[in-house]
Length: 473
Image (cartoon, rainbow, N blue to C red):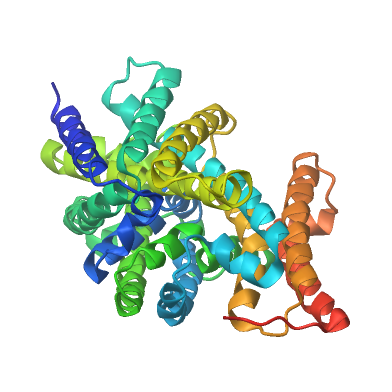
């Protein structure tokens, strides 16, 4: 049995053990979805980091960094701006004792906004879970190359679904602390060793093709906006991050965790991008072969550029990134469906035991749907940006208005959610059918620009024309 397989089995077994132990603590829906609102700032920081750093980072951003080189350093900046805003929001969000972000939306815009928000969240987050499955499968296939691709994806899907099913936020939050630490330590150990292999910073730079040495010249303005805006919109309204703030034991714990998240996310994101750029040099020098899917460059490095023990540690780091994001993005829509549809409209009188049972059943159903979607695309970067756009363009403008603008009109808020979602879906359809104008394609303008732009325009103009403010609590 290889050391890689041993590391993976030990890591996954530990997660299941923690989930099984924490499952005994689940008594209410609040326990399952929000860990009983008792998380400290330390635990929150770990779970915020592990939730945000996912496959979109380790595979999507690696794919982009490998393709464009050092210009990819800008990718984490939009997320950093979003996290900074969250540091100003976290304590206010926790004080309101909300359960989901749809609670905030309905209070400002009415019941329809809760339904639209739940539909959008579920669609976007299940897409995100689906490519987490494929990322996990890439690791499994590297460890067990004789295993068919289909079965690798199924195995990852079953594990993530079972793990989330067991204890919800309790198991997710506490193991995320370990996952977050593993990310930091794994990259900090691997990167210096890899730099030595390519001859230090000078050797790295000399090995990079000229086209990948430009810090500013790769992206057009339209492409840059299309890359940065989806992450910004997602993080400003991400239900997973808000759920962590809802789970804090106090408003101050929520505020502290958001501040710590800002620094740790930037460090890890840049280390991932730097690792991919080192991967370019390793390939150019013939130390490793270029992977068939360049998004898998980190996996290739772990197996072929590091000593077995350190490679296994880096592999465990990658698995931590995949699992910690997959379970969070599976738990969020399940909690939303139960809270915002089942409990709100179907069976308001449901007791805690029934709500926990329905939550677990919903996790199973959504896990199965994500599994079916996992076979739809092999890309990471473009798929992740589209999922971010769906969510960010529909929910984030309305959510920010609900939190900051007392003059927003309920109908304008709801309409902006519909406009953002429909525009994103239509733009993506026209894009796949090659029906967009040539100048739009040349400028690299993606769905996020028209979708978010029209959503904000609908929100502002609609509120100004109707001029009927609502009360905020």
